[in-house]
Image 1 (spheres, rainbow, N blue to C red):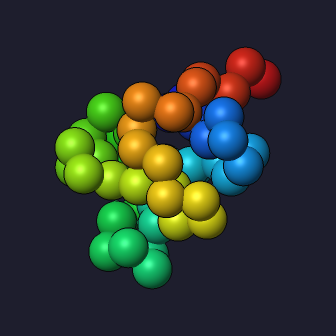
Image 2 (cartoon, rainbow, N blue to C red):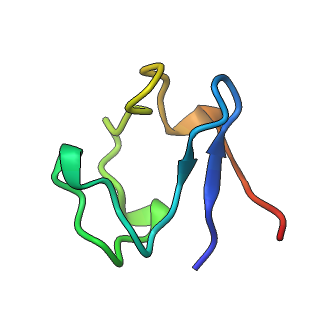
Length: 54
């Protein structure tokens, strides 16, 4: 699965890890995150994330 980086603070959402602090289970694809998901570090929404090119 693709990882996504916050373009504001560079926090990376890794679907293999999820975001346990926000109740997001490991294995949750970025596309399947709730529409109101925000970056846990800076609070911006999904629109401010980009695919991490590996």
